[in-house]
Image (cartoon, rainbow, N blue to C red; front, side):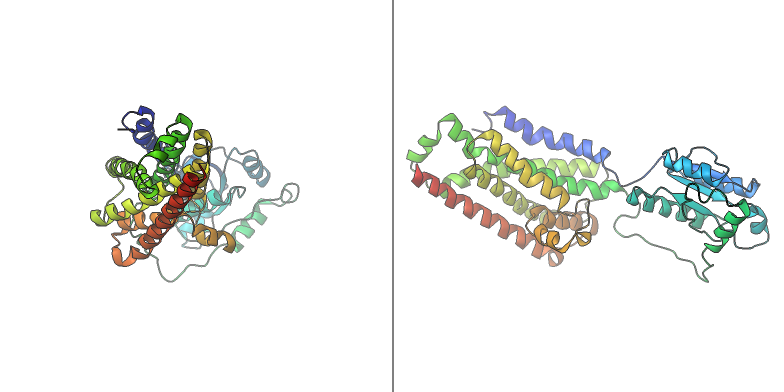
Length: 383
């Protein structure tokens, strides 16, 4: 009844997660498109124009100018007119006709290392699927004032020297669990975990603080209820509502973004309840510590949103973090639920693979709710 009489809480609970899923589901993407590509075609043959066409019509690259020498290629990248420059040396078409190795150079702006690695992977994929693919060399970036004195023949020699030898085999890769490499399959489950943690903790962090500010906390103290009964009474309604919201968000992710639901739905529901219990317990603990709603919301946001985004493996791989930071990630509930959610939705993982993550979540939630009850008892005794 208290929640139903507070329309603001209902708006936050139901509307905000859906809006944020749509917003971040489209805004956050690991795909790199519309890459500015400079074309330095020193060959000017039908074969070189065919290679250029493969890049321009791949859906990833947009032609941004035609530099004619190393200095112009360097200026295009330095001025951010292009993120990469494709170099096709003179004699490329002749080498293809004679079945000789044909080096192709690609210079990439390395100021953004992640984007640069994605661009290089796109280039390799396009060249590998090209009928004229022979050999590719990654040319070093020209140094201003130093490389401009080299002749075109010298650059062609360097291109040939940096090529890879032809392997006596071909590689055919198979991607499991996300064959089309859609970012939404990776992003949406992570958003679900982060949004549920933030919203649930924020709502329950206001539960007891609201009683203090409205002056009804003393009435709770003189009522014939125990501390654990009050805590349970504050948690259960939000747990039921949060579960409905979670089901709604997962349905939107499945139907609208096409994220598959490969695993057992009952296992997903059970682990979801454990995670929600953990998030609500964290909010209640905050509610027993602070004395104002504004501070409660700020603390809930700080302790849920930032750690869940940075330290859960949502965007940044945990294995690449320093050892000390990896130890801290064991305290972030979203880390465990992300593994559970992606395992059930994408990999059809069962309880045999996920029981330890669920057990850790249950342990964290139990510790948080126990500490909340103890702190609330201390507050009652103090008052």
